[in-house]
Length: 186
Image (cartoon, rainbow, N blue to C red; front, top):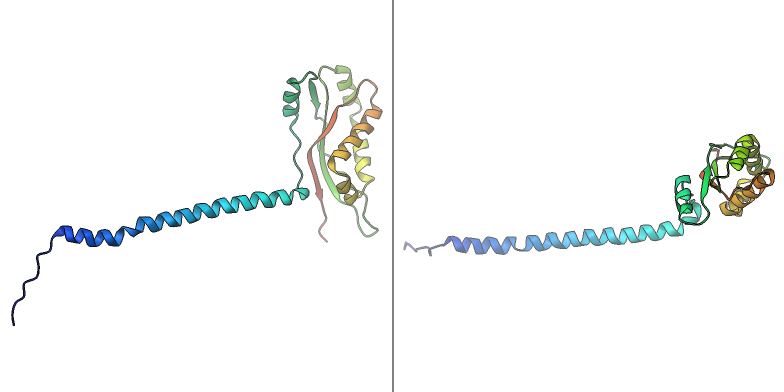
């Protein structure tokens, strides 16, 4: 048997073999990372577009009293906020005879001209009357009536009804911190 001599192997040859095997790994990881980033971008775009289409079911929150006051400082007519009404829980008019109405949680507050101390005092004195006006308003409509009216129209009607009871001035706007319907589980 003849002894065949193996060719001399250099370590540089091993590096070439391993380099070819592991050279594709960073490329594969980069492709996977690119796919994940693209999925996140496409998913975000889809989610935002879906939220806009469902926007009718969700209420846009009113600005806070502080924000309304700060925005009014930039204009010529400065406003103050009366937010001592608190949270109210009127029950809407029943849809039909078997229904008991829908619980509505509402936290109204008003804007009025800043520095109008007489109006502030009148609103504070008529606090109970204002709560009664708001409760009676919501109790005279069904949930579907209120939803079809829209929040903007409800605020305008409430403002007008409250202003009818005020003598020393008028409130500018009605806002809701909360405006949530609670349906009973059947």
